[in-house]
Image 1 (cartoon, rainbow, N blue to C red):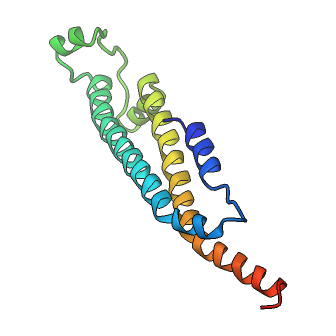
Image 2 (image 1 turned 120 degrees about the horizontal axis):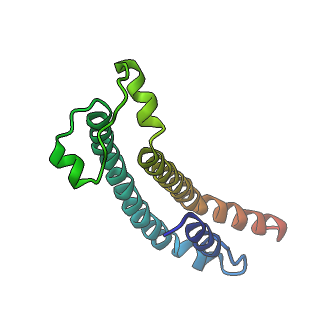
Amino acid sequence: MTLDDIKTMISVDLEMDKTELDRESLIIPQLHNKYLNILTDEKLILAKFETNMKTLRKFKWLYYTGKLSEEELKEYDLEPFQLNILKADIDKFMESDEDVITLSSKISYQKQKVEYLDSSIKMISNRQWLIRSAIDWIKFTNGS
């Protein structure tokens, strides 16, 4: 599910019919549950990406330090790394590696999805107060 899909879904679900505030109040638990389930799934995906990053960084460290065996190089279709670099510079090579950059981008995107869903759930939780305020306002304007 993309961030745009989530945004569209939330925009539709959070539209409020001001003439049926009682119904709107009753669907809050369902909305909360729906987006909590989505948030949980997206957090699990984020955790998987972060675990994959740890594995990838270890693999790249082994590659850039020349510690991969010939079998591993053949398995991943890699040529031996020819440069002799200082330990302090290994991170520069790893951070500029295409595989690391690609996975970092996926992690950043996934974090945005999780943060957006988290904020949306907070908004859904506050929806009850918004409905109550709307009802109080209607009572006030009707002289009750």
